[in-house]
Image (cartoon, rainbow, N blue to C red; front, side):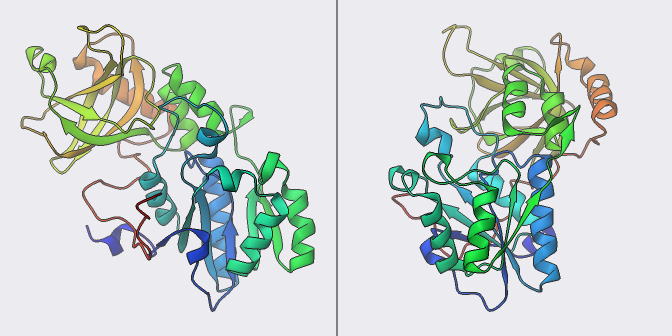
Length: 335
């Protein structure tokens, strides 16, 4: 699959607001942190893309790296619902024309809300801004949609606020998704995401315990920043260059140590081969009560019926075996 086939548009990735290229058409900005890109985020981005098309302009989406919470509070490892690479792929698939990655550091955290908007106006000359109803920004979270509207009147840009998306009577939110995953409720998280929750990494050598059970095994090295669901056995899908397979995923710790970092180990049904060193995605659909690998197909069918998601509902996150969105400026080494 080519990059053009994979993405509806070619998205430019820009590191740092100071490198934002001058545009000859109106710019519609989508503002938020967008960790997770859940159903609410997708609705917001769809509105921004729609408005950009209507004014014959370009949609630019802003995100932060690192996540603001990891700078403002002592957030533990395993906090992110999407890594930066995953987020950029989601942006591209949703139709954004540009993605601007802004470094959130101690200098930025003390920038006032009005100063930040003035900087956006100077750098992007945006025609419109799209945000969520609960969007806050600037030092001490001093800016909100009301301030944006006031500044829009001053600087000449329009503000549109996307309505939240409710699931089971409450808005979809990254907090709800984190709470569900930490409790092992991956099916609930998937309903909020509109896709299966994914763990992505490289297959590394393990201790071989899976092979003693008679099933192919893959030990996944997951970035430390990524939120790994609660310990347990999960039914899901594996995707790699070798194909796509229903999978049982074990999340736990090595019995030799008892405590320590979580280990993610996958048993790929109907697969025989060696995945060592290959990129692999695990898409978790449901937590199983037991470790019966034979029960995986039935568990997956039940999860698909409950969520309305199909067996290929890895959703917007693309395959790990194809190229990334076009990058106008490489990520700075000191980032």
